[in-house]
Image (cartoon, rainbow, N blue to C red):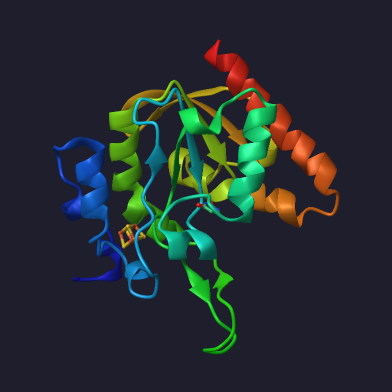
Length: 212
Ligand code: URA
Ligand code: SF4
């Protein structure tokens, strides 16, 4: 790689073959340095014709081990919130802005601690997300937290300002309707977990209503 500015998944993204080809190719992505320490690529999964696409930040520890997005504690909470909002998790397509787990360790034997991806890493990974959006063609994109929001809508994105509203924006050259909300991990960390959870469900209901 010539320089750090050259981080991009672009050359790894196949132009044909649909989601199965994307998933297969993403397993070998070397578009940024995050593949080096992670166990595996965690690509999007779910209904290839989903009306709702959910976009998180990056895989966590469990997702990195299992190779599927949102299978850990945040995913369990998200599934519960979706059901409560009247959305069937099994009908959705779920993915992340960044496809490899980024972490630090206090020492080699300690557990892995989540580290937020940089803007450069999210930008490098964006071609995968763009390809997923183009193939699934969701009617509503649920944006889970600041990393996904900034990756899709730019660095001025503020989740507190736009959560629970339907935004209409051009994303990777396509008109999309997006409903931002908090990240389910933020609900798990909140002082008032119940209030934070209610807020997440309320935002997801906006997405459910927007589907009609
Ligand atoms: N958090 C995310 O943003 N994505 C996952 O897949 C799991 C936890
Ligand atoms: Fe490729 Fe994204 Fe993984 Fe970086 S994080 S290596 S761009 S799949």
